[in-house]
Length: 59
Image (tube, rainbow, N blue to C red; front, top):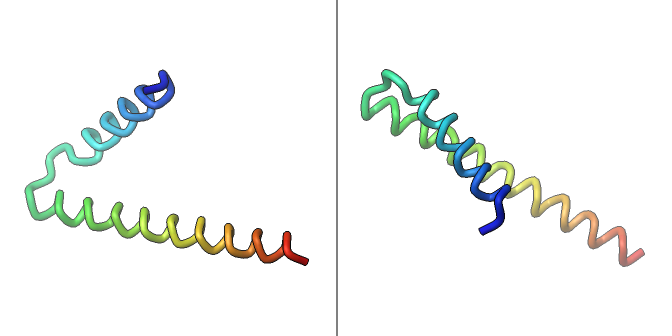
């Protein structure tokens, strides 16, 4: 694992701990679902941009 990977993991863990402070289990599940949706949306954007980029290279 690269050093910056470890730093990213530590940063993400710190952010998760701060965001989850004082939340109950149901609120934690809502927060997790929210971030999962963000992740899915970003993945879709990446795929879309990659497809557009590949189409532009063909022409």
